[in-house]
Image 1 (cartoon, rainbow, N blue to C red):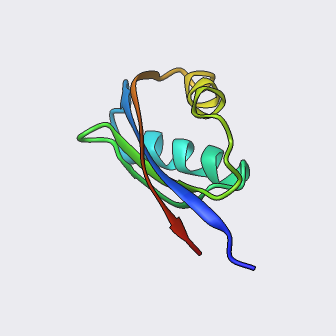
Image 2 (image 1 turned 60 degrees about the horizontal axis):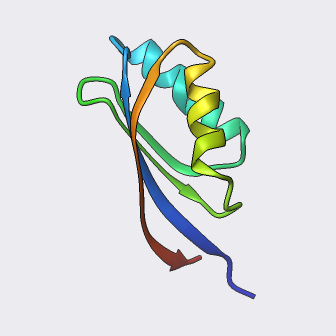
Amino acid sequence: MEKEATLSELMVEGMTCSNCAMGVRKRLEKQGLGQVDVNFATGEVRFENSLNKPLVEIAESIEDLGYKVVSLNQNEKKNL
């Protein structure tokens, strides 16, 4: 049985260094999200959401770290 993952992208403000990006990446990986890619310079956070967690919930967990999520974008779904 194949899993379906949603590819999502968030724009996050307030990340200023690679340690910021690593903190966000670790937070998302602990939530079971895959293929997490965080770029502090551009503010882009991309991940696969095979658990279909609500984006609002994911955004809130990033904001709990002290950053501001300014946009949510769900891309296409793909089979894993």
